[in-house]
Length: 166
Image 1 (cartoon, helix red, strand yellow):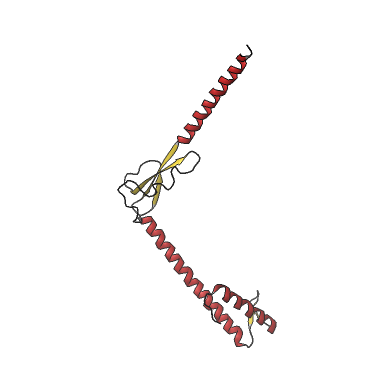
Image 2: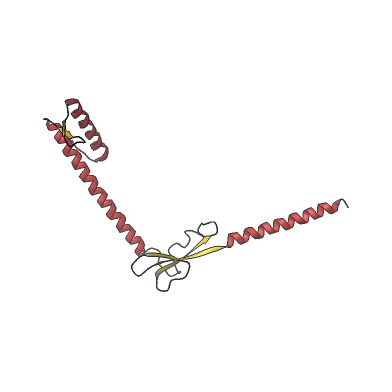
């Protein structure tokens, strides 16, 4: 009779282990399907239902923990006949926007550098230099303040302006 409690405990342990394995397997296989498509005006749309008139439809599966099922395995493909080397419209648009942003940043940086160089030229010319105070009145700088400003402008030029010759 001493073995009876041990066998009951063993059976309960086996049943509990099987239940845990069953629950774990069902939670891992549960996935949510999301459809990604491009609308008539080029906008990217996400839906839980298959779109009727979208272009470049892609099915994305998310696991119950929020991570993507097989992320990256078939990214961007809706069927096996698609050519993966050609970028889709969204990727082209993103690349164009990034190129335009880079160009605008380069132009803004060039303008800032030119302004810094102009300021340094004004500081090097000599004469009386002033700043406007909070009341809108002129405050003339003394020699020490001019020299400090000159050093700061020179540091900014050497830090932010590539190929700066001053």
